[in-house]
Length: 295
Image (cartoon, rainbow, N blue to C red; front, side, top):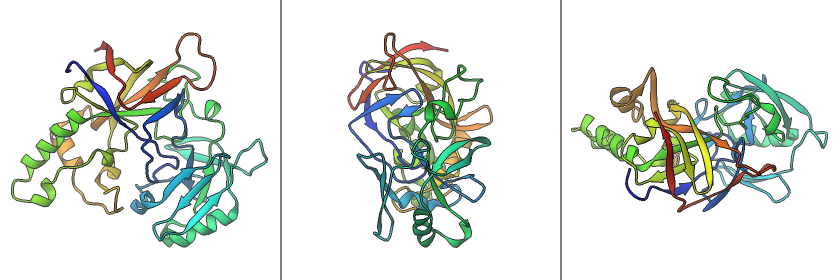
């Protein structure tokens, strides 16, 4: 690692699988960045609907409102204001599912489902928008990588995902080498393909694979495990078009960890001594990264 590894961008995704926000600072809750993946789409059985099911979901742009609600802008330009939905305020309770973990969320009004149905493929069936208003109690992180009581919101599995520009540069170099006669397949991929929360510059390629504890700014994080990548990384986040086969082909050839096609590391925040509220601290672009423990 160079002398000055630092955060170069922060990203959060108010609705799971929809378009990102890129703030310059973000408060950190034990279960993720404030406002990150607290809403998601589910089917009639409560199962999460993501870009794995329909890549065009990423073209919907969500903006959180000051009252706890949400404004959605569809690809066709239509705008919908979604009121705050909480179980405490008697919103309907929905039993929802992320990768087999079932938990309760607050369901938004039927008018929201109708608006979404008009703008999503018929083949998805019933689509509902739900809100996780109690992330502190809802989803335990995989106990193999977390302590009892450590929870995550509606992210796939962990509170934050960190990625590095050094690893992306190396991956893009391998992609280019693998496709010497096809400039389309050889084109460099942007970091947005990997939907990280924290992007760090100034580290060697794949250095993060050996980290176990890091400090970013004033906050400490445990590095839980590598992030195994899926079909979503083949989707252009600006157009909603699946490009394939990269980066999955290159990760399979050049960066398997165990059986996983790995890119990025999952982080779990550590509560600072003396801090008792929901907000553990704040991350900011420009924060320095310090490696506290390696394996």
